[in-house]
Amino acid sequence: PCTPQRFLGFLKTHCEQAQPGVELFAHGRVGEWCQRWLEWLRTEHELKASTLAVYTHGVLAVSSYACTLLDDPSACPTSQLLNLRRQAESIAKQVRQANGW
Image (cartoon, rainbow, N blue to C red; front, side, top):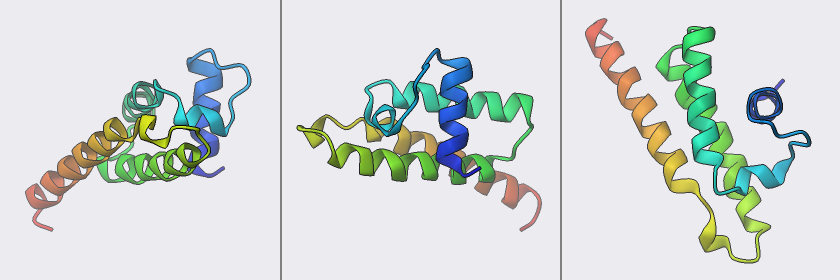
């Protein structure tokens, strides 16, 4: 499955969202849920920071689209998703530099 489907599956199984759909990507808690998902992916599946950055980008892209469906797009909670992606990219860069890449 693609990143948004994986994220929705996580929301269903770990965040008590019985009917996950595109509207959850514009929910005020999407950043919190994404952070929980990334922590779960990192600890349970040992994914690299670069992979987490790509996954965060996927959630951010769908979130940006979902926000266009809102009556008030300025209420879109993308700033936390942007910060999560920046953090993952920064960690990935540090790892690459430490490995001489």
